[in-house]
Length: 270
Length: 308
Image (tube, rainbow over all chains, first blue to last red; front, side, top):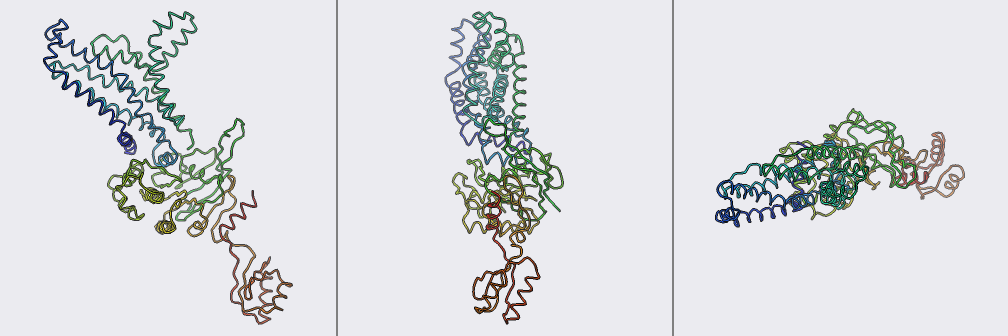
């Protein structure tokens, strides 16, 4: 009950700060574009242009749309979500607010978990709205109901949750929204993509075994949103997923970082 | 029955500089708060008052010592269900209305929605905030926020309530209303733990106080007892003639305050009786003999001044 109250307060905060209203507005715009700009004639025309015909052509077209949309919007969605939730922990830790919260009969572990759950649920629901409507529009217009696309909601939420755990840790330690955003962006947009292509890029330039070992070490311990995006694309296109190692190691990273947040939060005096 | 007991409670903070020296915020602090009393904690800035409250509420971790609240060592959070707290400079989420603040903190105290609604209606009426209940608190004045804060602290009808500067920013009429609320709570058997810089206010409502200085307990007891000046009396009598005054000044340790009033300092009841005998033998009518009483403020200033 108390845990749920805190989870719901995260929703209230998001609404009050108009954070997710922006996400909702952009999502609605994308949905409207899909609703009005794609009609049955254009679908048939595009199928003809692709040189394919019949169900196979429609299938390829729909999957192409889905993959395109995910690849384009992936970074946008993650960026927007991370900016949206980055202030949750620092604002909770403000003097006068945290004192009251800690005087209530809820453990510090549950406070962190409630904030985490609240943020993840918010993003999940936002993605259900965006991806769900896009899926319904694409499927109803094309007549091809491609269910694996719905799994994107899960994979994107997972990617977000992994990075959000890091935002929570930085927030608990530094109480700074800006620092939380900067570190998570640096990780998601620079470190992870570089580590993802390390074999094709860095290792061709550096053949020192120790350096390669260190780079590999960081690749394996850090989260892998780029790899998870690749897995998402493979699932949509129906390709065989080569390995789920990036998912498992990223989830482990998330659990470790959340545990560290709880540990630090428990020790900290306010 | 004591509701709060601490034994050798200490809190050390790491120094902010690079030295290994630690800052001792509380030093082997032992005290008890009895059930149903209004207990005041006093001390100069940095004495450790807020640290003590925060440790009792689990907001700050203790370095060592024992704490018992409601007869249990405070290792779990369940004791907080029966607590209320109004922090100094509290900060409610400013996007909430007064009513939503009550609802949020009520539910955070483990109350049902129905109970929260009932208590909110009652309390907002008591603190005279009913007509502002639907207004966003970012539009509230400091005094209004303080009234709402007090209502929030009472939402779960706590057995023990901690108030850190509850009248901060409140006008004199509002302060009187807050005192009345606290008196009413005391009548209902609630225990109130009060930290206030307004010593005149503490003197008015507290049953007992503890005075902290540099993290240590320097004095504690009933307010009327600790403000008494031992062996000092004020004698009220009929008009004193000049020769009686002179004999009083030479024969006794007195300070004349007026033609029918003087101050007498003595070490024993025998001396006091000798003085009374002298006055009666000289036909002086004794109208009153009072032990001299200090104000809490004077006592506090003298005590802390002598220590620093």
